[in-house]
Amino acid sequence: MEFVKKYLRSRWTALSTCALWQAILYIVLFLEDVPADKLWYPMVLSAAVIPAYFLWDFCRIWKKDRTLQEVKQNIDITVENLPETKAVVEQDYQELLNIILSAKQTEAQQQKSKMHELTEFVTLWTHQVKTPLTALTLAVKESGLEEKAEYADRLFEIEQYCDIILQYLRMEGEGTDLLLEEYPVKPMVNQAVKYFARSFIGKGLSVSIDLPEGQKLVTDEKWMVFVIKQVLSNALKYTKEGGITISMPKLDTICIADTGIGISKEDLPRITERGFTGYNGRMDKKATGIGLFLVDTIMKKLGGSVKITSELGVGTQVYLTIL
Image 1 (cartoon, helix red, strand yellow):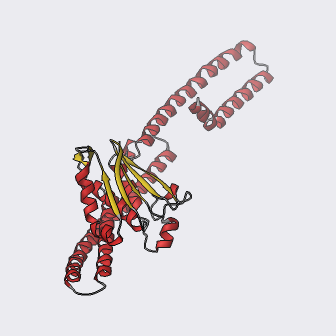
Image 2: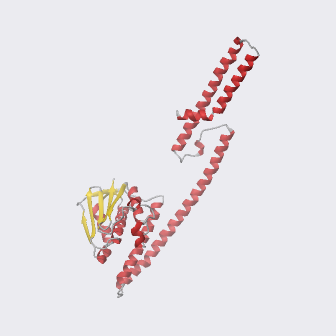
Image 3: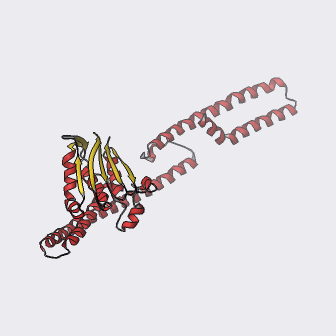
């Protein structure tokens, strides 16, 4: 019915013109005192030919409309699949579409090439930066500087930021090298906690791991460990006393809860948006707004989800669910 309305609107001028000419013809013939029996033949002929033409035109346009609807459903389809046309204006439109498509494809290819070059450059730069960072970390450990703990913490932060930018570029790229298999949860959690062992000890925070023995999840180990690290990094950043608890309230969900400063209700709905830091981030001055965005993006690619609950002054709970 919608297409019928569209067709009538598009052909309203032609239909009106045909009706007007028919009316003029009959009026002229009538005024010329043409016998009534002579009028029946052109009336019947026009009554048959004109509807037949518009029926043929309707079917032709309907077929084109169906083809275009299929093109809209598959936007990657090429212009060669557009319906054939002999109309000059429609041919001009298709030529214009070809020119626009060619220009867009060239632009997309250039952007893809630039992104690939940027990813390679940043990846190489990050790996090169990690080499002197490792050397500096070892030097700090072996030195007798009173402030070596502070130096070590700053070096650790730089290493984390390098990891974040690497993972960000990988997630924004074409492929994420996901390898979905069954992995035991506890070793992944232990791996992430061990990474922050120095931070737990330095801040005097406790860590409690309460996970079912042998529980497994279908996920990608490397990416899942990165997700847990990011959540732990945030928890450690905003927790001054108490500790962090890692549990599984459901067999498909990992919960990381802290006793930190919490997140305001106003910030919670936007906490996983790219670049959003919220009140805590503005106070912290070092927040990038990338960590939780990456967590949310990676979990979606893993076929899961992130849910965050929080209360100011009480703490935050992050639920990582693999669907």
